[in-house]
Each structure stands twice: as C-alpha cells, then as structure tokens.
Length: 400
Ligand SMILES: *Cc1c(COP(=O)(O)O)cnc(C)c1O
Image (cartoon, rainbow, N blue to C red; front, side, top):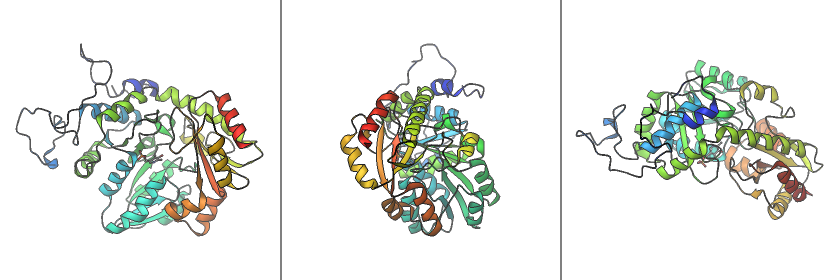
C-alpha cells in the first residue's frame, strides 16, 4: 500500500502493508530470530550472493520486523526503498563510507549534527577522503565550493543546533550539475514536515531515535532512496560493518511512527507558543524556529516545509553558561537533557566555543555568522507533548 494519494497520517499507520491476508496479525510482530530463517535451497553465504527479493537469511542481512519498518519509511518519504541501521550515526557513517572513497570529496554543511561533522572532519580524511564545509544556505557558496572530485553534498535542514535552513531544490541542482549526489539529514523536519526526495535529494537520512520513534526509548537510523543504490548500501555497509537495528528497537520505532502525524502537529503547536513567549522575554537575545516570521529564512521554510517541528533554539543576553546551570537546577517539567523529538520536553545548552572547536571547525566569516546566530551558546529546546501552559510556566520560573 504505497498509494501516493494517501495522506501522511494514513501512510504512517498503513504504509508498506502488503495485501491483506486473513488471519494476519494486525500489530507488527517482533521477529527475534537471528540465523534461523529456513531456506528452501542452498543459498550462498556471501553478502554478494544476496538476490533481490531473497527470503530472510540472517538478521544482519534482513528481518521481517525490520522489513516492515523499512517499507513504511520508504512509503512516508516517497522513496523506492529504505535500509535501517542501529542508530542515525550508523546510517550516515554507512552512507558516507559507501558513497566515498580515496580521492573523493565530501562537501558538508558548515552547521550540522555534531557527530556527523566530527566523523567527517576527523575520520574521513584518514581514508584519503577530502572534506570541506560550506554555508549551504547559500547556493552560490555551494556552487563555488564544488570540486571536480565532489561525489556527495550532505546537508541538514533544519540544521542542529541553530535551525538554519537549506534550499533543497537549489542545492540538488548544484550538486547534480557538478556530478555529485545530495543527501539530506531530515531528522528534525520528519516526513510530516518535508520530503527531501521530492526536492531532488538522492538520499534522506533519519535518526529514528528522535521524532519517528517519538518516545525517547529506542535508538535507530535509516537511509531512504533509490532501490538499486540502497541494495549496494545494504550489501557493503550494513552487512559488512554490521550496524544492524535490533528487532525490539525496530518494533518500538514502528509503533511510535503510527502517531507521527498527530504528534508532529502537537509538537509544532507547543513550539509556536514557546517561540512567542521567548521572543518577548527580556533575558532572551534571539530565538530561532522556522515556523515563525521572525526566523530569517521564514520564506524558504514556507516553501519547503509543511510542519515546522518542535525544535527551537534560543540564546540569552548575558552569560549562557550561567543560565544553563540555572535552568538545569530549576526546570521542573522540562528535562535538562540532550536529544529531541520525545513526548517529554528537553532543553540543553551548546556553548559556541566548544562546538566550533570540537565539531564545526569554522573560521573567518563562517565563524562570525555562526556567532551571530548562536551568541555565546544556544539552548536547544525540544517542545514535548505536555500542555503548553505548563511548559510556559516552567520556563518562566526557571529563567526568572
Ligand atoms: C540525533 C541525530 C543524529 C544521530 O542519530 P543517533 O540516532 O543518535 O545516532 C543525526 N542527525 C541529527 C540531525 C540528529 O538529531
């Protein structure tokens, strides 16, 4: 059931379902089997013996519970196929290692998930892969940063932690004109917010740990895109590097995904109220949320997003570190904790000096631009599903 005329809320509950068979369980089964899938013939043992539509063989190759999740993710993103991984990092690392080799160039967004930036800047160069960062909010800057050996352009929109946006259609054009592929980390937007493949991306990356699972109780990741390219990724990266998703986690994520559409509407509604409150708070220097007309790229957000998600970031006028300690001590409902996309509201401070040094490695105007958005640090606030009035009251007493 991948009928394109179905709505997202319906696809989140039925997408990827096969034809109804009488007596079939209505809820997803957790198939815990690892190696015990019986085979009708003497299948080869090598990953390269894997045929399209081969029966399940070993859970690191494929598994019925993972297949259900992958089918639904592909349906939600409007992609041909999906491959699941043990975490978002496992998925993105697999994609980079699968698509890039010695002598190739990766062009990376100058602001993105810290783990992705660190893996790209610290680890890939050891393998002879060139990596450079660029402000992907400017298609001209991306065009100028393309090299003859650029194979992959990786962006994140909205991007951690300052929620800067990238024009996906414009960057897809620039990447393809230069003979490169485009991957989009759409973890913050979710398929309810946007569908990067429809804007020309070759791959969508998700940390399933966040909104797709939605309850903060399972790690997972996925890449969605063309079936042929994902079959290669499964063979060479999933099977051989081994970062397979556990069936129990896949079940939790699959179950969480059924309520993705109504949850995103509630996350967005709460974020809208928190943004309005923070925007007029005397201690707040800047608040960034793509659903607000105060966001500097509001027009782009309107063009490529249909839900603005529940993540916002703000900086304070004085001493971010001091305010971080104050919030950690005083917040009662909102947890002072990392991550995002849970039922529970979360808040965490990301000091600018630290993230520039450890993750982004920016200098010159790129550093100045980041500091303009982030000040001495940003509080990343993930609006949960509590009553908005209670969240506002908690934040107000803690900021006071
Ligand atoms: C959390 C996150 C990741 C990493 O995902 P894990 O599941 O924690 O490995 C990657 N990208 C973004 C945007 C994230 O928020």
